[in-house]
Length: 294
Ligand SMILES: Nc1ncnc2c1ncn2[C@@H]1O[C@H](COP(=O)(O)OP(=O)(O)O)[C@@H](O)[C@H]1O
Ligand SMILES: [Mg+2]
Image (cartoon, rainbow, N blue to C red; front, side, top):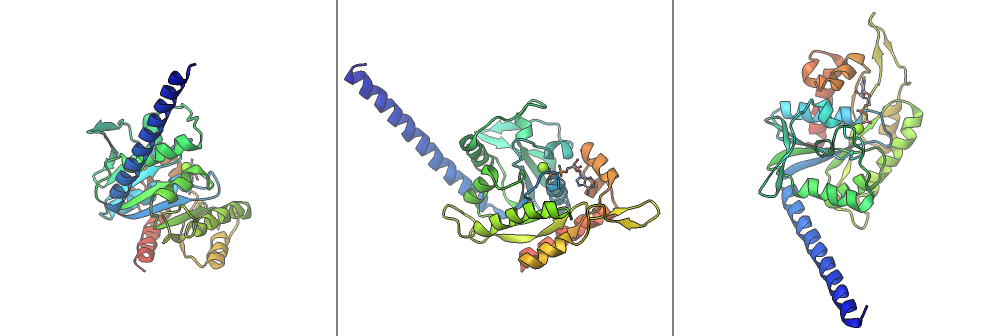
């Protein structure tokens, strides 16, 4: 390669870099503007998988929308997106004037998930930087509009997805989901420490973030004869609550019927009324709203 060819290749690369930089700056600006139109951003987190984060995120979003709030649900579990199935959504996303139009579960609940962009069962094979861009686009390029709440369902742990969210968005706070066992609690503590660290971490946008409270899922099981048993132990949420001085927002029973409904795309909070499962979510919403006020 002669020196002219080398310098033209160098110029091209520099131009590409500049273009990408400008795009990233513009995306960040759009993101900031979009997020300013959403009152509360709430992350549903846990250090552990399978504890019920998606169950909590979905039913919380539905319950808030039933209270009359404008709600967005953002499923950031890019590798295991479940929220779309749990809500029984079939439609695909559309694009209008360069903006992604979220799916509507109801008039008051808009939903965005990786699941809309994947063939059923297809895996997402991405490394960190690609995930960051995808998440920024979900925040910046979706027509969220004016909302009271954005509920974000995070994957287990405190990896790229959680970090990108807290760096991009001023997250009001986290709802921490746990089951009562001690093993789960050890991992859950890591998620709680992450939230606390985000108040002072150098690139964080979430200096005012806090742990809004703990939800204990699969807290107990009510036998057909009415007796209560605790298959996963007792007292886990209270222990964390004392340790971190944060409230317990609610305790959700283990209920096979609720699981069945979730699998069918019928969120129990609206399709399983009059049950302890539903009541647990009404309590969680009440306590969360109270906590956000104070
Ligand atoms: N309280 C509950 N009672 C019965 N099944 C539950 C309950 N909470 C969650 N499940 C089921 O457990 C599985 C894992 O829950 P999920 O919300 O997907 O967890 P995570 O998002 O933390 O991985 C799902 O099949 C869900 O329907
Ligand atoms: Mg999940």
